[in-house]
Length: 128
Image 1 (spheres, helix red, strand yellow):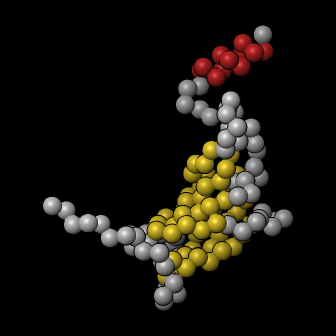
Image 2 (cartoon, rainbow, N blue to C red):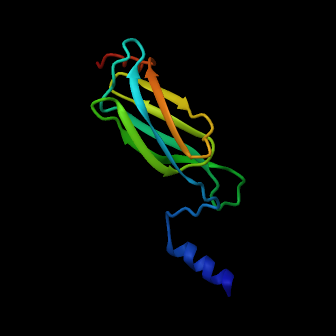
């Protein structure tokens, strides 16, 4: 009977993903700066990805957007989200596009980072 209820629930929730893990709530705050001038970058999009263990017949982790934020006028951001131990961050602006891997979280589950952007987006070919 329990299997039938679980199967019915899964059929009734199309598009939903059930995760087997329960990562802790973690807070990441920091600043995004230009590497060449140390000037703050306002309006940068900061996106965090961490591996999750979904209910699946395949032994795979999924990676999806777990949290995102935008920097303020001083290049500062802060976000709290349920994140596993391995977290990657992508920082994008109109000019830059760069990936960062976060160091291990301390016991407080709060990281404070400073990222200096230097990886410029590749130039697009001219339109014809």
